[in-house]
Amino acid sequence: MKQAKPGIADGMPALQPFEDMIDMNSLLATRMANLRARMRQTGTDLVVLGPSSHMMWLAALSPHGDERPVLLMVSRDFAGFLMPALNVDSARQHTDLPFFPWADADGPAAALESLLAATGIDRNAPSIVLDETMRADFALLVLDALPGARRRFTGDTVSYLRSRKDEGEYEALKASALLNDRAMAAGFAALREGITELEVAQVIGDFYKANGASTEFCSVCFGANGAFPHHHTGRTRLERGAAVLIDTGGRLGGYLSDMTRVGSFGPAPEGFADLHAILDRAVEAAIAAAVPGARASAVDKAARDVIAQAGYGPNFLHRTGHGMGIDIHEPPYITATSDTVLDEGMVFSIEPGIYLAGRLGLRLEEIVIIRNGAAEVLSEMPRQAVVAG
Image 1 (cartoon, rainbow, N blue to C red):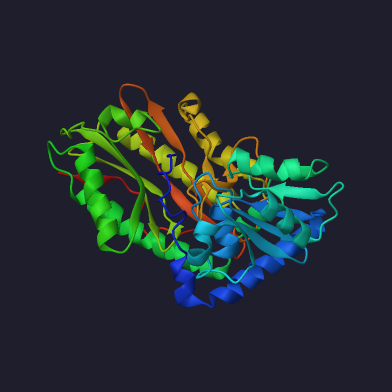
Image 2: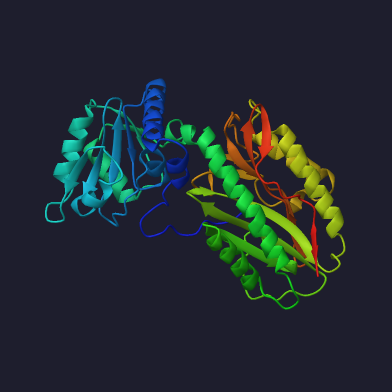
């Protein structure tokens, strides 16, 4: 459970691991072919993406155009960019797809019209997919130009494909997870009486930076602050006997990590061990339920039932998990109401928690991938409580 940091100025970080491991052009060609196959299967005429992780995944490009419209349009036999003239020279270094540039003095209307004509779609009543993360004014430009369009978001096209990670993505996520294990250990190793949450977070951030990664988020919670699922790391100082919860994730080569571990500074507070044991059983139950063909809601139920049977059902305040990859939160979402059917390659968190307001809160989190018919945990750090001091 966390909120992602704002994006960097030039869009999403580059997918560097793929450039090291495989032919990037071949990868992008495969993704484009897979998208067009999904478009045929779903009766989609046109996919329209704004600067986003969707665009980065499909084209390894996410130019920062501010309020200037940037769009990638993909039909069943054409793909091209609406591109501000200011971005053209830089963006050309990263893609061979055609540009339809427009200058500030002219506005985007003519270039957009030319791009739509190039897609070759029937403009009377096309079935189009819009990037749900793009700016509303970008989306309205498209809808105004296609007033008869039947529109939906990316759930059965781009998001569908992104939720099924390939082998290269698995390797990138595994590497990020193993680095995160070490970052987490560095955070717990830094615990000492009087240290602040912010200082521990800085230790973790420095570790990421020293090892070629960047901090995506870091929540350090001492004592009763652990009862806030989205605690904002602050100036609370560590005291003996306090519970410690650290939820942290970094970005390594474009792909993320995410993990929560708990411990104490000195003897753990009353009830800590019992809560930890309940949560560990809940994680194990959810992992066992996470198999191809199962619904995401069954994974949520498996974790939630363990906690409810222990008498803490009302203290589990959130969903069991969220998908992860280029984005820290992406499909599939592991909720009580999700009908998503789990499939090979899906990556998501399992993070049950018990929160006792004014006392303490514990959460244990693993990132798993559905692989070879079962849920494989990416981390290699034990879930046992860490006792420091």
